[in-house]
Length: 177
Length: 371
Image 1: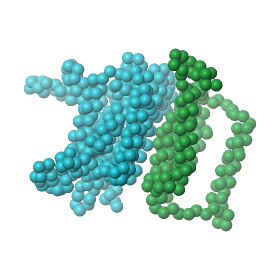
Image 2: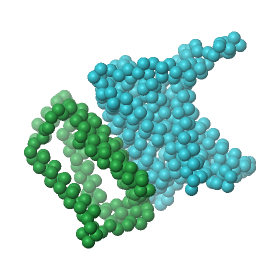
Image 3: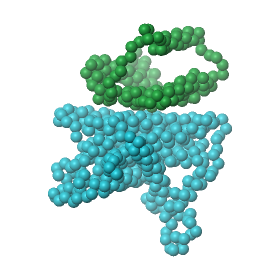
Image 4: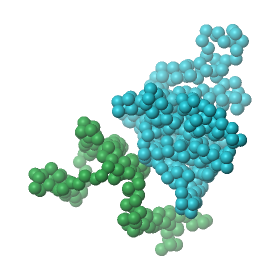
């Protein structure tokens, strides 16, 4: 990836990430978040991690952000007019920001403190190499994750299920408990 | 390097122009073809100086639909309702058109062609992860419709937007599963490789098109694609009888034209996907690099350049034929009810898609080879 493209995309990602927290309208924030995810995905693709980049667009920008959109609609979130949020929220936010700053320090620090980077061989991010790792070295973790997802799906179906003859989904829960 | 860059740019522009012109043809076909099927006359008014009429020719409505309609739309007032989110209301049509337009560039429309000693592949972008790119860009089409519905500050529009979002997310899954089974058959994500793999014949006469090995996946992609384009019988997001126009009820002028263009471009895209994945793309039955190898054993030599160009024509022919088929489906079937739509998607197409993937996996593992 040529440096000018990297700088351009990086700047775009930072500006849109700022947009997420600066915008007062939740839908505008969401759009800024989608823009951030897309730029980061393009950065991934530019750095040879092709599959990760496309999966980020498919899963995050294409599916999870739509879910966010639905949540914003269903909760009927309105434009914020003043400062809100609990003290605990602010505390955790500051903590996370401090952690990120520490991380950045170890990347940009003077050479003797800096973390070591290794250059991956060309083609490390292709589907073949990713699938090879996933289905040999990390097979157990992969299968465990899929069982977890299956359990979540079965659980949500069980909660939302209606008993025959009733229109009330809560009746099903009463019987189940 | 520079020549490849220039060729790539030209091919990308060419492909997007092809998509746009195909949309214009679909607009014409929508007006006049539907009239033909429904035993109406259809648009027959606008003429240039009435020349054809004086010569006794019937008015085919070409000027009506390809010139008068777009000009009328773009010269109308562009109205933004009170209380609407102005920025998103303007952005939404382009947000829905953009993903379709950028998807056209990965579709292979021909084999390689040799011009002045350079071999140029006839696809704008030969991506190794082409199928992933396709799924990624198609998935982004949701935002245009959803935000159009939300930003209009209109209840019908919001309902349409929510319906569109739920419908597109549901049918994307079936679409993905159909594409996955094709990918497993060929063992590659590269669309050009998938089309190349469909060259040659079985039993001496049957073209090796995927539709013969994956008929179920073809039907899945056809139905899911029709649902993804939000057209009858899946046009619940814009159903005129209940939501008036659905998510673009508050749009007028050029922006509404962009939404209509998106609809037609999506239809063209679905036809291109079906052609690429199942109908052999640019492959012509029995045509090899050096000419026709007819089933009887006869060989008809054809120059290499003609073979390449015939491939492009064959691709366009298949796409137009599929577009017409999709149009005829539109004018034949009644609209589904919303619960029927969801049941078809989640209880019909998704399990069938999973079943198809499973069977494909068994066959691929049992025979130990990909097509």
